[in-house]
Amino acid sequence: VEDKLRIVPPEHGMVWNPDDVAVKKNRFYLPVRKKQVLLHKKPATTGKAGLDIYGRIVPGIEGIDLSFPKVFNGKIDKSGVQISSDVNGFGYFKDNAIYAVEAEKMDGDVDLESETIKCEQALHIQGDVLSDSTIYCESDMAIDGSIYRSDLKIGGSLFCRGGIDGKD
Image (tube, rainbow, N blue to C red; front, side, top):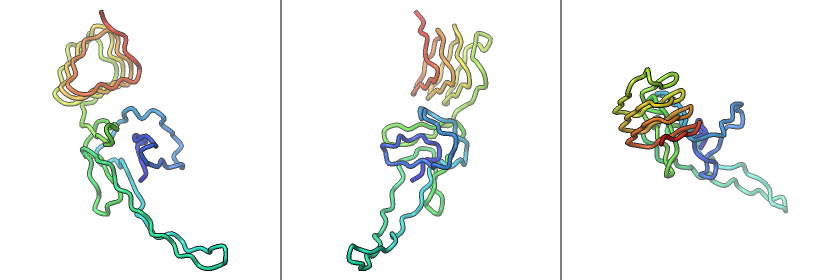
């Protein structure tokens, strides 16, 4: 099974395509688009026949077809060889499953001028959350930057790449 997003840690049996140039070592969470391929696998085949040490033909061994991990908000195609995201948002790996989370995307920083942000679905902030900002999110939240002395109330998981500078 090939992990197209590189979101599943290798110890879980996923293979990353060595032809990909952009190696993403941080598999914390990644943006996903609707219909984007999350996982792809090549169906198992019978191995090639070979020879033993006496020159006798040894038949190929039947391959083992690997199963996909559980995926939330993803769909297996008709051929059964790939899973694509059903949503725009972000994806992450947790408890041996891949989660594709539909999220509202905010470009740039959140600051005092943004006022109080209230969001019923997941939120992906592509910047920092600056001092004295207030965010209420009823689901998961992913922040590409840092959080600086702000008030956050989150109903799901919080992902923050840059770090958190606390408030009182």
